Image (tube, rainbow, N blue to C red; front, side, top):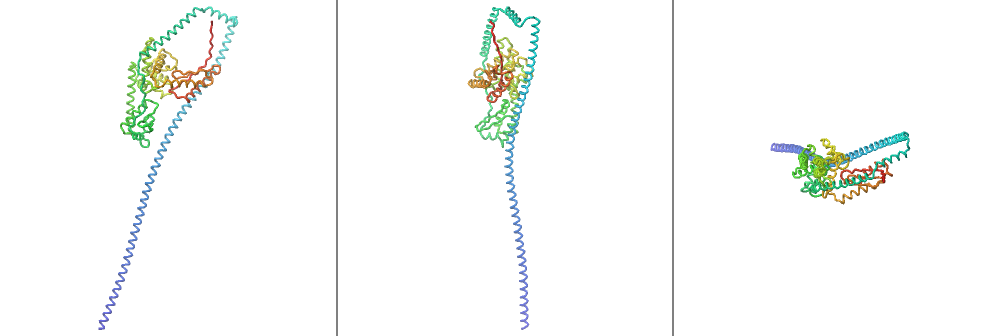
Length: 518
């Protein structure tokens, strides 16, 4: 019994020890598992935090790059605008510099000429003094040889002259001179009136159009292009200025060269109709328009030659005649004016018994210089004469081209005929658009301006306002001062007046003595 009891106690003790050991082992494992779980959780949290930090950094970098790109685009746009403004300012400065250089060269040339004239004047004065001495010496020798005094020699000479003159001969000469003058005036008047009546031409000529119709304001934006790319390319390619303002449906093309302006107008019209406007297309359309214009110039020149019945003109002259189709003078088409002058000159030449064909040729080509006077310096008469000289034109044609405004003396009878025909064509009613009041006022202003200078007695505007002739007081103004007055008047005209072409200033100083022998 005791043995069973001891065995039971021992079993209970062993069981308790076993349970204690199991519980202790289990708790140790649980602590380890808990630590492992905590470490795993801590590791996961750390990795998740690092992932989120990287995501935040990436997003921050992306936002930074976007802000940087936007800022750089804005800065680049401002730079382009500044560069365009700087380019425009540079162009204007270059233009002003060229004009200033031209004015400086002209002023230097005038100063050189003035110095040369002063030297020549000094030499002439010395020669006059020397000549006066020689004449006085010869006079004394002659008196000593003849044995007569000065009064005696004068008396003998007057007696011989008086013996040779006869009152009847003088009266006959005077009567015939007056009759010839009156007959010549009447004959010239009849010839001019007959030529005007026989030639009938249209009264007005179309003016060259320099505007382009635009369907809407959106097309204006396409013409300008992004940041002005298209309009800058168009102006650079065509050499014109394009003016786009608030005027609805119109774009203005501006250029001094009428042919270049017409090419630009044709090109812009085609671009607007086509709708495709970009630099490559602009160059393509401009090239096509230029070729077409060259063909049109030759065609206009041939048509004018056919109308004037001059089929043997040199080929290089034909496109220059065609250019006159796009040139106007006070609203009068220069090519039609030249054809009109050709026919008027032929009629007057035929009446005078001269070569009508030669007069017609000189009349057609007299204004050829206007086709190139915007490209060369100087007046169109001299430019035209130099151009025609290259093709061996006869003296009558060359002198008519150079002298139809009185710039050079007439060396052939055809030049006065061309001058008369030119004046008739320009002054007939409806030929030019300038009103009579405006024309007369411009001439009066020109005369008043010249008359305001000290020492000027009279001033006359001639050649339709292309020349002003100033008569100075010979007792107050010497020969040296006349050059300065002419230069001052020319500068005053350039500053205060608006006028087409150029105005020639001629200053006259004269001492005249009139005596009558009765």
